[in-house]
Figure: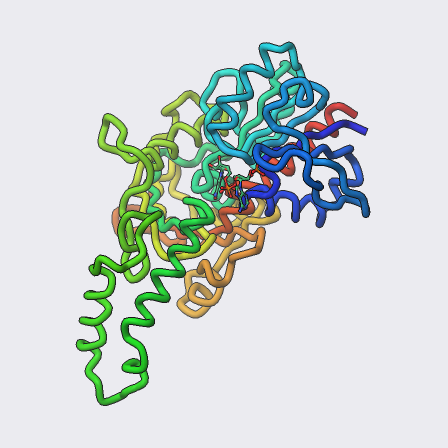
Length: 372
Ligand code: NAP
């Protein structure tokens, strides 16, 4: 059996990855080795009723013994270890959830329901570095990949509504603390029907603006508000998250950098783990909505169509409905007033699954199949 090194397995993305690997019985196919940056010598999680000892994740000699390394540890770890490991002569497969290597020439961004053909070609051509894409980009392509793969998208604008989980576990906790502080600021007054809603609203506004409001991680109130900026500023005025859309989408599809023009604003909202996005798409052809829906449905087993009806949309096309599931529903598909080649669409998906853990879990299977 191939030796697989797992780094970052106890973090948020890593925990989702390991849970999915257990569900899909991936551990039956591999010999796993658990690495750690902080707990070397302690017991690993149990696999097939057995535990082992956690290995130091900066130990290049130990990493060199692996056929495949999967890391969810983050970019700092990747930058620290990857080049040392390659310089040491290691020629195994590196599968990584962090962004550090995504746009390097020697890497592929993996999202096999969308680009399996390119991944297989790259394996034959000797590529050994496979990196998970940005969560929002991967979710857009899981939902609307049918249109992109058929080369029907001339340009698109994605306005996002991104969940707290994209910023990490501490941020998720702080969002709940913020919600809790808001609730406490109103207290029993919420149950008093005599009290005007404007008094309650005033208490909430005072609470989110107060010095005591918990913002150590977010820096600003997210609960009861939103944050229309994610990542650093790029030279052209985009945020880093907005910049990733065009460049990563085209890399995943094997296009040149700007073959399909994509842009939009990325906004953090108070959802826990589902990223949503509202898209305006200019198609290359004036297709019927039914044909568009067929292309989406046929593109992969997880993309689903929600009819453009109020009840179905509110029931099925929300973070509350989709969290924890691999389904990527797409709805609000309709021709826009602007013209027949312009459509709107809305999609939501679990960003810890298709946005992070699932593409790299599936990449392990692709490499194992390739190695035979
Ligand atoms: P995380 O939860 O902060 O975990 C990273 C590491 O922190 C763990 O592997 C663990 O390493 C260490 N750690 C320290 N204290 C811990 C504790 N109490 N519980 C669990 N782990 C603890 O990071 P993450 O959010 O999973 O992100 C990991 C990477 O995936 C990042 O590069 C991120 O950019 C990327 N990514 C994240 C998302 C997302 O939605 N969050 C999406 C796509 C990609 P040791 O065991 O070595 O101590």
